[in-house]
Length: 149
Image (cartoon, rainbow, N blue to C red; front, side):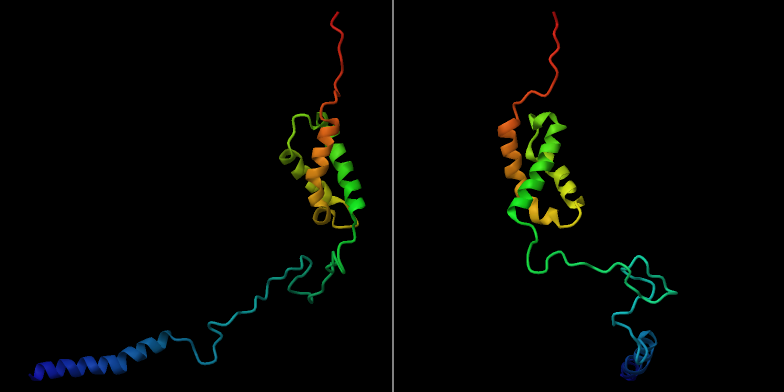
């Protein structure tokens, strides 16, 4: 019976004194920043920032819309119509093209136009203008007739 009591006492002492002291060695120190969001000292979203210079924003963000779009329907129809006409003129009047073929090219061109955010404002006009262009000019012949006589 004494061996059982002695084994119990040893196990109790180990669980009360030894195990907590072993776990305390692995615990974070008092007032540590473990678990908190750490500041990253060598990162900035500004491409001109370096760790030796103060954070200065050389390229200030510019709002695209202050009180709404600055383009109206006529502007979008005119710009998208010109881009569709240009695209189709270089692709056989879009005779064998679908809107899925033309939309990526026209969207990239809209995004590269200066002054306004044409890609966001005028993207919804591409489908209708493209289909109208194909109805009007899709069957027009743009090739050269060669006389074989």
